[in-house]
Image (cartoon, rainbow, N blue to C red; front, top):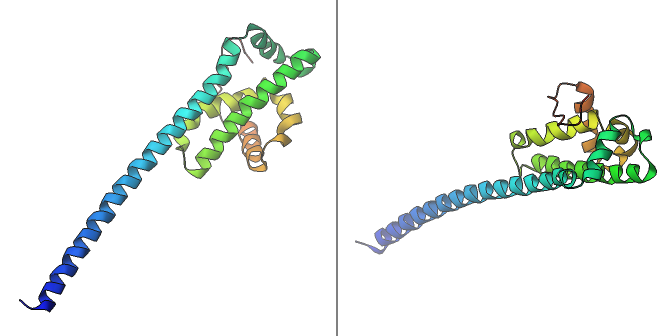
Length: 164
């Protein structure tokens, strides 16, 4: 066996090792992407749960949201302020989830329930609020939300106590 033969064998071994390494890295990358998406969904779910929990743990806030069904002008100035900031937090949390879906950090189909809840809220209880406050959000999100609200083709997710 010549030095050239040994060199060829060495190159073959190096090529096989490179392919194995690339295969291993591809598997690791796929697992990492899956873990990141799972973590993003978990965080999104927690964020939306905190929004819902604020109503369930605060009877006064729940009454304000129910009262807002009849229009923001029916709320006192204190109630209007609480409603405004609760809506701001709720919609901002969903905007973040929406952006994560655009980036591919969370699968679009995984946020459908969140989407139904927020779009229903905006189309019903929060419609006046949305019209006057939407400029606080990104243009892309405003366009998306307006399109979804005006289409009327979303499944309503109105929750108990809030009926339209």
